[in-house]
Length: 435
Image (cartoon, rainbow, N blue to C red; front, side, top):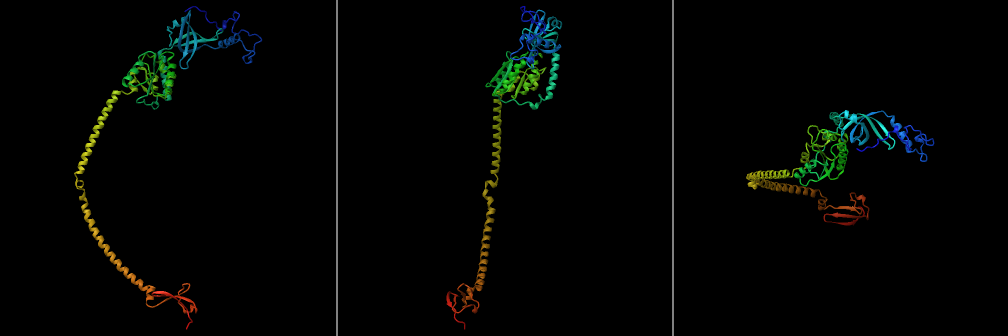
């Protein structure tokens, strides 16, 4: 690395004129005394504000801070690096003495996790905040695995791994979303084996970094993009195995929660049997390898064809047996006398019906004769009681003009017109004088 001067910290910052100045340099008397007193007409210049920030930062105590190492550079007796928090995608610049790194026996590479005891320091010239470290410790795999176990317990208590949350995979997806490495065999294993089983299988592939600092944010972004895709019916996250250190991103809390929020059925095909990443637990289906995932997400066309052929044969055999059984039943029924000569069953009913017909005729004649005699008797009685019979014997019915029957001779006045009805007709008469 080429020689370059170290950044000037706030405690030795040169002024604009090139002379040294401490962080507590006194501002010109014409400037506002406090930040609250600044206005657009009376602002603080940068040379005045930067030392004040340095004073504030210098009051902070040293702190132990953990992060993932990125951008490692050596210069003279210092190691420059960036500490990154993969969960929140934040980072801080830091320096560590080279002797301290060597004393701890650390090999600082991108992706390693460390803990640094450092104090924040403000660089006046470029307005940069940097953590100046004095001690450094490496975070071992055991510590990381212990943290993963603790996270696993916490997420399980939240219900993220419950079987009730898991949804079944579609039988035949329209499109398969695949999240895989930019280089590697996982993509080939999934695509090749899926299309070998179902030649019409289509893919939406998102290639990401599957280990290191960029693995989590890139994978989360790919999941969100595929989950929002209208044609993607299932998503596969495939890696194809690796060491426990390489698989740490797939147990990251941010990635696990992002996978839990995905509404599209999710398949985890990380391919590590011994140490199952937390992504396997939150996914709807865990595949042991990318090849296993390919076999799970699409059906085997040849196997389905054989199944359909077998089903057709079974259906045809069942139908043939049913028809034969029904034909036997029909023949057995047809051989019965009642079906061979169906009219015989009507003979007893025919005879009984004829007898009933004859009996009903005799009963009807007898009933009519009896009713005729009764009718004649009633007619004779009616005629005997009828007024007509009385008229036939020579009597007459006398009525006044208003129809009143005359029963008393005193009720008739001489000269009154009367109507007289006899046996055969009716005539009028005028009443004469009473004798």
